[in-house]
Image (tube, one colour):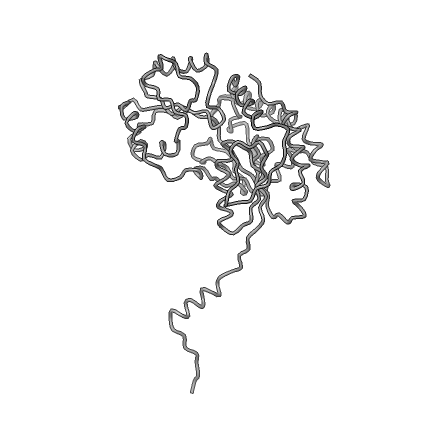
Length: 342
């Protein structure tokens, strides 16, 4: 007489599912963000890491523009050499001369030096962080081959199909770019060697990123080699759209000509009066209607086809289904995209 053990079917399935579960552990993540529009997308990553059970600590400069404390993550503030008012003044200067003078590399170097001297960062190794999430900000040091024969150099104006002279220009610009990176980062090389056990340049340090999160879509780029540790996260900051009745009415009035979205990012909302006047005159001649994020004083004779807004809801505007399906969007003018690294 045989003896067996009987399980109900559902009970057996539940038991087998439990056996297939593996252990899951949350890690400790140190976040070193770049302020401004770069943070707006990184914040989504940080919140998602927290929701998945990871312990997240964000180091924030005491003069931060957009990085604030949140229930989704912990923050620690470190001192910098400028106040919030100084920072606002810098961006006022930026809008007057992208328009005059970029921030001095010596200023950036001193602020980075203060950051690495900050107690929280010095004790990071002892606090058991498993991962550092940061923003490289500049493209130097990305571990990605870029054959100049078909990968256009930045600001070259070339496409992936180049004539021989264009390829020569592309090769020269790629070489100049590498040389400029060495010059720009030369001040940081000593800082890196001072805080690491082995001698290493800053460019080499950046190239050791375990994974690169590229905040764009491959279909919008020229063909180029991609390394296994690179992941595309374009559109991660696109939230569920909200209705825009007022803007929709303005856009619909453009008819088949479409409309133009003009924005220079979260940092540049104003510009010198003469520069703004040139834009107004250029837009006046267009058949399209223009949505412009602008906080300056509008001219008395502002074109009727231009709508000025202190805050432009890009996500809601570009996500409206009717705009995309009917090809109403004539052009989208903005600044650049960013990349995250860890």
